[in-house]
Image 1: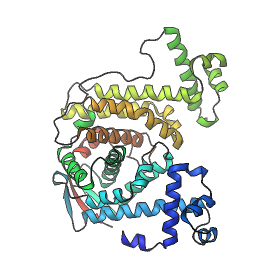
Image 2: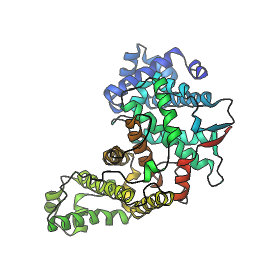
Image 3: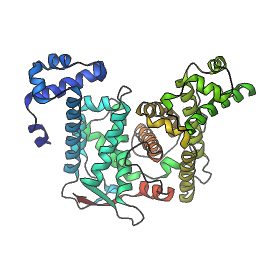
Image 4: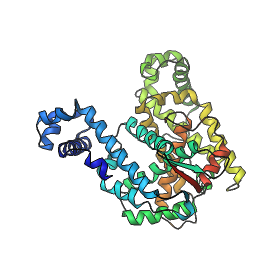
Amino acid sequence: MNEVRSSQSSAQRKLNASLLSLVITKGYSHITIADITEQAELSRATFYKYYQNKSELFQDLIANIQEGLLQSVIISFEHSKEIDFSHYPSMLPVLNYIEEHRDFFSYLFSRNVPSQLFLNFYSFLASSFTSEIVFKPKSNRLDADCSAQYLSLAFLSFMGYWVRSDFKYSAEELNEQLNRLHREKTASWYFSPSNEVKPYSNVPVREDRRVTRTRGAIKQGLLSLLQDQIPEEDIMIKNIAERADIRRATFYDYYSNKDELIMDMLDELGREMLKELNANSQGQDQQGLIESCDRLFKLIENERVLLRILKSPARVGLAINRWFPIFLQHYKAKQLSISFDKGLYNYYATGVILELILSRAGVIQNNFSSNTTAEQIVALIDQKEYELAYV
């Protein structure tokens, strides 16, 4: 980590810090070069000595954060040829690094962060876990690429919890919480039904049949257009109304705009995915967990047309915002015998399952292969022993 810092001049560090502060307070699109140099107390000439524009500066900021984080991971595991998460190694170098850069990581997990930045950060982790430090599962049924994807999901999930709890625990305290989490982790956390199943919905449960029929026609109208490979951003209300065989005025009787329609469809899909998880009648039985995961994967495959809207990073952010409370409620309802903070479990499980869904849907680069089976996913979650290789 010291090498990363020393490679930058004092002026570059000031410009990085200035941009990050402004991004948090103003948003990236509203920032000017003058804003950056004024806050950094540097001249425009100094700025252009190092960067051509603010985009180049932003990329430098992200690259330095990523490199520092990767170095902290390597330090955590250095000199280890094997690792057993039943005896969790100290992650203090990683946690100290995140705490030291809490402003950046708070931004990364905020509602204001561009979805593409979050997805790129995941891709960086997944790539690093295959090209820099490789976690090879000892089980012959699993490969290092799948392991990299899962560990990246888990990594982001615990970071997200810590940030959203406003750094409730110190680095030392969270390290102990994670120690217990990984020692007790099991696939049943994700794929067994909750103890209290209540439908999560933003609309009334009971609807007039005519209303239900018209809503269905509108949704099918949008799906029909997506099926024809028309980019979602090019689809207008009039196009949806024509496919649904209704007047535009009728569309507006049900939805204020296209975004509201998409949110309704995402909510409906979120409830359907949750239904598949709760359909597991075998509880924590291994075969029941595999079948639950398999049903979830099949549903995602059947919804490929709707999921095309997630080609837009902004729509990915929308999907996360709609699905997060649905799954969080599900995991909050679970009654578990665990020795660590239930809040950590709630956010950790929600984060992993959502990122697994997005990965399976092909949203996240370096995603799990569509050939990865439910049995492999369940085995991967239960996997605790790895061989380490440094590239």
